[in-house]
View (cartoon, rainbow, N blue to C red):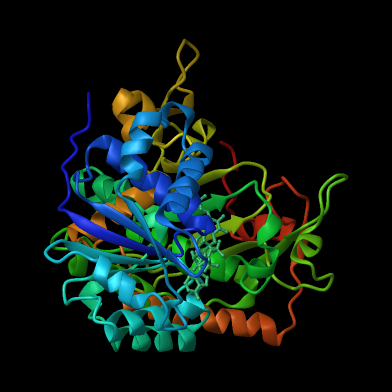
Length: 484
Ligand code: NDP
Ligand code: BG6
């Protein structure tokens, strides 16, 4: 089964920060993959822009090396890479000065889609927006793509929204949350709203609780300086986990269109209750015999930043009142595994008697790795000896179900960039959504800062601090095992 690839319109895509880490690891290899799939028109162009002096030939060499380093071996074909590189250009531009902007303006074509990807430090987003307009480079159909983090609190996010709004309309701004570009994350919507099966049960009457886990095995390593000012709450919860929570909890939008979907997500964020500190557990990974602790990685022996967080969220609306949503994410946990588990309530009455035990259905959606879904159902244990019940998984791995097509699934960045060219904002965050997310997280952060809360140490490559397990235990529940 080959996947259908619909080519996008002709475009000029400028990547500010085209020589940086994100561009080399994700954006450019992703564009190469889209080129190989046939989705990129022959005449489309990609323009790298940064302060350092390079000519186009040098930039092409940087990108050639990046594709070789960050793509799968079987995707690297010398001839194809060569043809792809012909689409690349480089312009030396300083976001904070006037140099290079005239060259960029001269290079841009009329009558094609124009997109400007801000893959530079967030402190430069406002400068880029301003200069694109001041130099007459962006027309009214141009799009800007803004990387994370989008602010570090409500005040800074508001300011950034205002700065961008001076130069671009909301319909031109594409705020990236790469989790929304992941195949399985989009599948959440397909599963919920494409099937009659689940939606009638998708509420507090039938759902006991929901767990959202995004576990990583990597530490903060070389990103210690950035991460220590951020922590798991700002780095992961305020954006990625909140987006997952929204997609799981939102009401069905009337259409799959950008504002209908984003309106529903916004309502979820606005309905989140404040959390008291008994329902937040923060942790920091400890050293192993061979690896440094979080504090050593962060370069601050007294750091109070969390590399792990677990929270219990409650949503005040008719659908979810009384159903806890447990969220957790952390670095150096026992496996790289992200999943959403919807744990249903027990059947109201067991006709099989107490000895048959309690059996709750669980729908687990594995986001990565081994993308797929499992529904735990109860059946009779085979054989004689009465009615004994066991739980078995109804398992669907996307790789098995979709065969070769699963290999063609675009990486999150590839898909999102193609959506920018198509002008589809559904999988991008709207300004009010980001602000609402900060409005909810700010008081939580302020509260632990005011208490000088010290994160609990946890063993590297474990499930996180014991207190996180206790938080659920107190409510008669337990976390699902973190496993690939
Ligand atoms: P890097 O520091 O690796 O790259 C920064 C890029 O910006 C370089 O190309 C640099 O080139 C260019 N640059 C710096 N100053 C200027 C300037 N004044 N004018 C024009 N260009 C400039 O950063 P990353 O690639 O890691 O991050 C880029 C953005 O992506 C950030 O917002 C980050 O938060 C976000 N992000 C990054 C992730 C990652 O995995 N790296 C993950 C998620 C988000 P030069 O010095 O030559 O100007
Ligand atoms: C980024 C965070 O947004 O997402 C990183 O800044 C994190 O800290 C990464 O490691 C996780 O993304 P993925 O796609 O590897 O799950």
